[in-house]
Image 1 (spheres, rainbow over the protein chains, first blue to last red):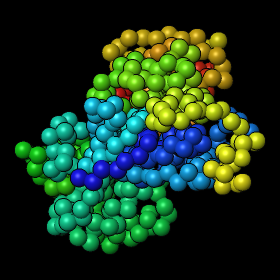
Image 2 (cartoon, rainbow over the protein chains, first blue to last red):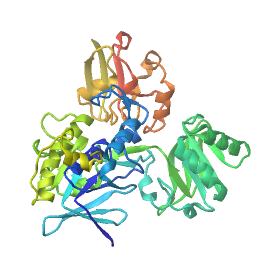
Image 3 (tube, each protein chain N blue to C red):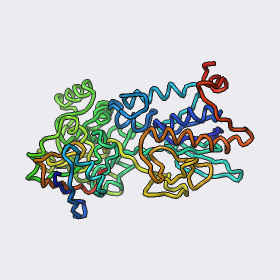
Image 4 (cartoon, each protein chain N blue to C red):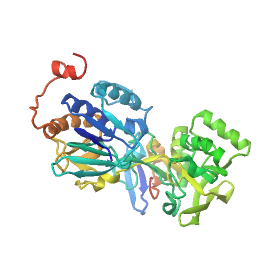
Length: 340
Length: 106
């Protein structure tokens, strides 16, 4: 297994994780960021890219996506490395005090400092309210398509009315034995082009569309044979050997709970001088941390990133003297930013 | 003040004096009603403040806007009286409103 060596691993590439790259970069700390989403921005990008934020200092109004883009521009001089679509599963300390961070893609990172900037936790697919669905997960029920071949010549049931549901309806229909799309209403919040292509498949009889909700799965030992649907046509059973529910994402604390850190109601308590957790060298900033008076604001996370950096620097580069400087006047800092 | 009630999934009632203009979700969070997660903080972006409005209140509360209807696609166990509590603005007419919290939000 290849092992990447760096100063700092940041868990989470939301606004606070991104700004931490800037603060750490001013102190010559190299960062790798790991995020479960496929792009930077965290909740700003996933939950409200278009929605305005009014409490970012000096930005009377800025959207979640604009804030993400501006932060990426701001940290560009420090060339952070991003690792998307993966979850940090393990965090272990080595004999010399440094850490090994492992992801679910089996990568290893060796670092001196870990910064947890994981917001509300990792985004994970929502599980629909179908009794017993757990025993079919990973065998017949999937929340994403990793290999299309798994779906070839299968009776596919897709549930949902958003872009994911429609994209996979269009992509899988040609290789499926049959495809049923179930949605709770006959309106779709997806790209108009996808909606019209799906409607055409419906008209041509190439897919089966049902209004309703899945209420049960028929099958045994994880192998699905059909699904019960309660809808406008009453209760019906459809043939289905594969099911793909697309109900969006929810946030779960996930493996962070197993890293041996003290927790307070699923949040990580930190001190307010260094924002360090109960484990030296592991810091927590942004929405995921807790201290008396904590406010879950992006601007609080920015402040926490700056203070965390002072402590992280001493751990990562103990031989360096930490000198506090301003970007307005320090040629040294301006050189790092590529402006001097 | 307008009196509203949340009934948690375990049946516990939370009677709350709500300020007009606030949202039902804000009142639930302020009074620690279990089961109202409100992950996105009221941006109508997450469907984790889902409630069932009492049948007799459905018409008075009104229909969800298209944006809310879209978000409800992502809620758990959606019914005809489902609403996102962050989109219900408290006003005089809602005095006595009862909302039930679903088994879970996600």
